[in-house]
Length: 214
Ligand SMILES: Cc1cc2nc3c(=O)[nH]c(=O)nc-3n(C[C@H](O)[C@H](O)[C@H](O)COP(=O)(O)O)c2cc1C
Image (cartoon, rainbow, N blue to C red):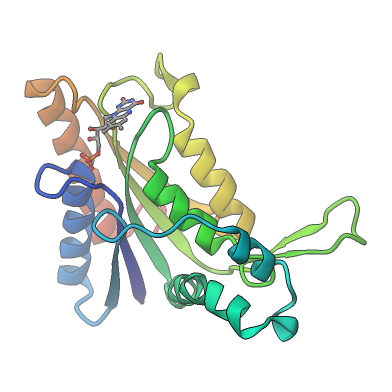
């Protein structure tokens, strides 16, 4: 299998999502030493937001694009190629202001591409969109400052990250998504430690046994 390992926290040593993804990859490599991994660091190397040139190019058929349009999409094309080459996406995503951080959103905007990861047919009024990404799985490793955002928790309604991930990756065809979250970074102490250890344990279990999703 080929894995795409993405980190998106601007924090380095203090980042819990980086610790979770590193732990996942370490365990996976120990169990499957012949598998390969591509690494992308959106925290250290942020992507540009989409621009007017980018939008014009993306919505121009590939065969009609000028050299400038092709250049505007070069990085997006590389990111899509990288995504399509992976069987499993392992993404570390901090929880910012009830959703995904802008650095990860910039990535999402670069990989949701008409004609590459989804198709649009205006003749099909009832269902104009088709996902073009097939057979991939994703594990999202999240860290949150507060607690109670889990399914059934008191703050679930304010968790816009989990549903956004499922909607946008589902839109392009990645529906097999496992989410593991650590909580309580803002509180620190035993509350953080307990949540982090639980998330690390679950992460390693998934990496080792490829369960429950894998
Ligand atoms: C800009 C910013 C916004 C944040 N917004 C929230 C929030 O809405 N809810 C929450 O529980 N924690 C919030 N946090 C706390 C982070 O989710 C927490 O620090 C998390 O551990 C970040 O991931 P990292 O450890 O990988 O950097 C925020 C942190 C930052 C820096």
